[in-house]
Structure formats: C-alpha cells, structure tokens
Image (cartoon, rainbow over all chains, first blue to last red; front, side):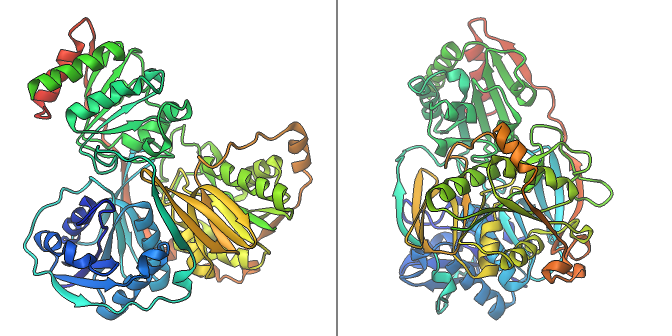
Length: 320
Length: 259
C-alpha cells in the first residue's frame, strides 16, 4: 500500500501532538498508509511516538535538528520535499494552520505539485472537499499535477484510532541557506488561557457588539467555562475593543467548526458567518428577532443576553 | 526604499458569490468586484514605509481588465504607479501558476519589499507570500501585525494564537499584513484626481517571458471537479425569552447531549 506523508503539528504548550495531527492521520488513511513526519528539536519524536502509533502511523520519519525551529516555514517544506523525492509518497497531508498552509505552498513549488488547502474530507480517489465563500458553497477538487498535497481544516475530521507500527527512521536534516532566510527570534504568548484553543475547541461561545463592553465579556466567559468551551468574538466586538483580536472569529480572524457554536449578541454579518457557518450546531442569543444569525441557528433565543446568558450558565452549572 | 504592493480584485464578500458553472472558476463577471479588503492595509503600510524611508510604491495586479478599478483605488490612496498583468490565457490559473506570473513580473521591477494582504476573501489560501518567497529565493515575513524596517533588516510581529512570533530577515523580502497592522487611509479628493494621471503599465504573459500554455485552467495544478450550494439548514427553533428562554436553551443543549 502506498505511503502518505503526514506532517506532525506539535503541541506548543507541552508534550505530544495537536489534535489536528490526529485528524490529518485519520484523513490520510483514505489514500494509503500514513507515515508521520516529525520536524523539530532533538527528542521531539520520542515524545510524540505513542500518539502517532495509536492513530495509525506505520512509520515515523524523524527529522530532528536544533536548527529547524529557528526559522520560519521553509525548513519544514525542505524536509518534506526531500522525503517526497526519496519515498515517492502517494500524497502529503498537513494540518491546516497558517504555517501548515504555507508549508504546503512551498512544498508544491519545490515538487512541482498542486495543493489544496482547508480540505474537510479526502476521498480514496484523491478528491477533496472544500467549503468556499463563507460556507455557502461546497467544492470538490482534485490535484492534477505531481504529488497531491492537502491541508486538512481543524475539527472537520473526527480522529479515529487505528493500530500503527510507528517504526522510526532517521532523516538527516541539511538546511539550505534559503531555508534559513527568516529567523524566528522569539515566540511570545500574550494571552495565557486555561480554555481550549479556538480552532480546536468542540464548543465555542462568542460575543458580539451586543455584549456592549469589555467588562461584560465576563458573561460570555462564564458561559464558556460552564461548558468547557473556547471564547470567541465578532469583528464588531474586537473593533470596539471589547476582546483581543486573537479571538476574532470570521473572515479576517479564525475559522472554527465546533460541535456547538453559541453566538451571543452577534447579528451574523457575512464577515462573521464566514468563520463559523460550518459549525455542527448553532445557538444564538440576540435581542433583535430579525438578526440574520437566527437564519443559521438551530436554536435561538430572542432576549436580553444579560438575562438569558447568566441564567443559562447557572442552569448548566447546576446540572453538573 | 522601493516597495511593490500586490493588490487583488475580488468579488465583494458582502454580496452573493458563486463559481461559474461553465468552467468552475470564480464568477467575476457577474460579481460586485472590489479591492480585497486586507490589501488596503498592505497599501497603507507601503505608504507609511515610503513616508519614513522615501522611494516609490508600485502596485502590481494580475487580473482581467476590470481589475483596473482596484489599481485605481490603490493609486488614489497614494501609490505612485502600477503594473497590470492582463492576458486572457491567465483565466483559471491556480495559485502556483499565479505565483509564477507575479514572480516573473517582480523580477522585472525594482523592490526592497513586496507587501501584500495576508489573505484574499475569495480563495482564502493565505499562501502567496510563501509561494513568492520560494520562487524568488527571498525571505517571507508573513502574517504581520507590526512591521519595522531598519538598516536593511525587516522585523515583523507575526500574529499567532494568543500572541506573536518575532521574525527577522534581510531585505529584499515578502511581507504580508493582517488588518491589525494599521488603519488604512481613505482616498482624498486630490488623491482620486491625481490617480487618473498616474502611470499604469499593462503587461502580457509574453512581456514576462511566460509561455501562455503553461498557465490557465487547462494546465492548472488543481481543478474543481464540481460544486454545489451548501444545503440550507433546516429551520431552527426560535423562542422569545419570557423568563424561561435560558431554561429552554439548556433543555435544547441537553437534548443534543451537550450538557
């Protein structure tokens, strides 16, 4: 069976791999035998191996070097290009983070291949599903040149365990000067949060202009915490200074696709819908019965968020 | 400092957008076409750099004749001149092909920095800076919320989840910006009038030394097989809060086995 390279996205906050990696391993199985590619500092692969085996990696290519994390994007693309040349895989599958998409793009140029970003499904014949135009259109696409490269959108594939041998093979890392062009001098975390990461969370609670102040976002945060959810914000809320841009959901922010999305005080402008329309279940709370968000909502409450949301938080907490 | 800003004309994300069922490419003819919103932040950043360091700001666009409107907008904000690559053979080009066209055009221009928006609202690939950096063999500083240039070195704060990465690279480089980087100026009346007289150079693929048979829909590296409107969601339940709105909401979540 043909091998499919899967680039491992490591968990930046600790040991192990991100859920997106497990999703990519699962999606890759439609095309062949997943072979995980770990590009990172020494010791990275050892910490990730058990998880990779659990999710079906038959092989683990270990490309470890002190240098790879010091430069942006290009080293990982270079390691993958080297493996594509040596192993002739059926495809390459990469988690669809900003970095992942850029790696895919550079790899496509290096290998003379086509690539598809933010795919939500890969069929055995290589046809990928993408969601276009703010979730309004479903597109099926195929790579027609070279080794197909896919980036898999977070939360669109359910990770399924499968036995894998995870047999390790060392890969020598010899970075070119071009791969050393952009130095990552520092990685700064400004918002430490105990909440799940927005794009990975299975529940997201977002607040909009209706929340009316930065202080009042505590109402949104309390509901999120009662559900173990991530907190998001609409562009209107971010532009008004209620919540940091990092948490913006929508066209110029994050795209999320959780099991449950709760939109509070958000009217549902196209800008926002672009980032959340593919959520499995959508709940809206808004005082305006005509708000377009209700067109998307599976369940909507027309009412004052300052009354409804704290009551809901209390009721959810009471059920635990 | 010479700066090239990449500007893309896209269908307005606020209006109805679709693919063209004749060839599965983005329907541009029927759309309300505008400058890609985030590109305005890149244009602004270019103008700020020019104000601080001198030099020229050149707009570079690949697109049909109608893209002239997007160029005019950038010129009215204050860019000095423009290059418009327009050729019927480009229709349906994929991202790698488009990057080859842009790279060829850039190689005929003088630049210290190439600026562009971090993402277009139509394709949403967010990869062009990476593709250009790869093709041109220059550094990519993508996803910037802050850019400073000093002594031939560009420093960028790359926006990330919950913070930023501090990046550094020598010029020339490709930099892409998010909408957190600045507040774009509105074109002044004077700017709009002046834009009408600014030079726009049209170039064909032949002018760039590109064989037309290597770009466009027929030879694109990926192709859309089919597309369909997303099935509309079934009508949901909407209740007015009369004291029990929250309770009904929680009952709904319970029925979904969420709580």
